[in-house]
Image (tube, rainbow, N blue to C red; front, side, top):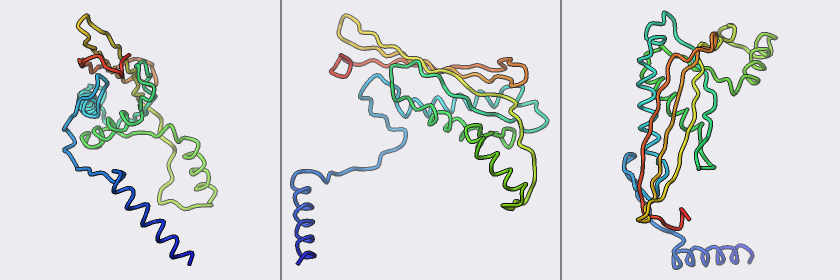
Length: 198
């Protein structure tokens, strides 16, 4: 009896959702298709920026002329945008993905966000609690990659909103604190003033 009632409730729920539109349709689109709905940075902007920054870093003389792989660690991107939910990790991981894929082993990334877990695992290996195929010291950082994201909005007299965005990145020598590379990516978007911008 209970099983019959549960089936009936589930069937009623499914039919109700189909009638009221809970079950919609969706389709896959190309990753570079961009539907601009506002003047904020889009996924296409972030992917384009990541590719540009990765390409520029691979041309830095300190990287190109290095005799051994260069160790890089990320520091956060400072959010100076008007977007509260800015995801710096997503942007940095996209840059790292392009760098690893195109550096031919010239760059190594250190996961400084996980350093406590790394030390605990290393200590467990050295104490014989877990096994490992190799025993090495943790490498130090050669360069830190960091930066900031900035945006502003401005309305003109015709009711159009203009959004200006600038993402700046720099590579800093961990030993000397010298900035060996800096570049930025900037763009503007324009749209009609709507409810989202009041």
